[in-house]
Length: 162
Image (cartoon, rainbow, N blue to C red; front, top):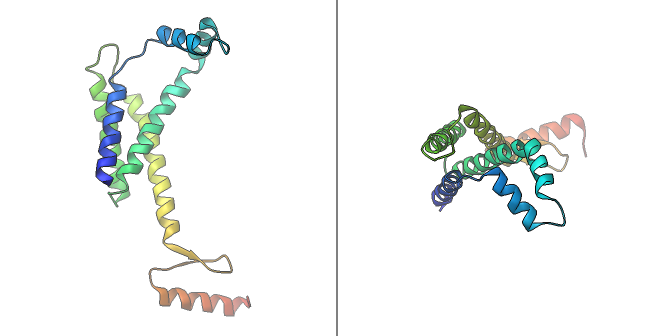
């Protein structure tokens, strides 16, 4: 199931990168959809200035999600990052075959921001879940319960937290 979720998301990413949206047609569609909020010219001006935030932000988000899904079944963070990088490279290569699209190394670098964020989030989640916080707010590793108990008892005794 975990592999299927990652493969399914990768297919969605591929399908979305297979398309091309003309910015003029997009501005026209937005102005027709929400005419009370903007005009076609107004949205075109906005889009010319801010398109990169939405488009490149989507790149980051889609590869963050993909890598998080991969890291659900790949325990090694480096391997998960490598799979994310491979997927980003293949996605950009795929775009070289699509009319009006092109694969860019800069887009792979932007995709890697999502991959790195996913690795950092996963690392943080995994490292915090392997710790237990006792009633004093102190974290002790719980992989060896006897050692954790001894550390806790030693710390409390030394610092007189009773």
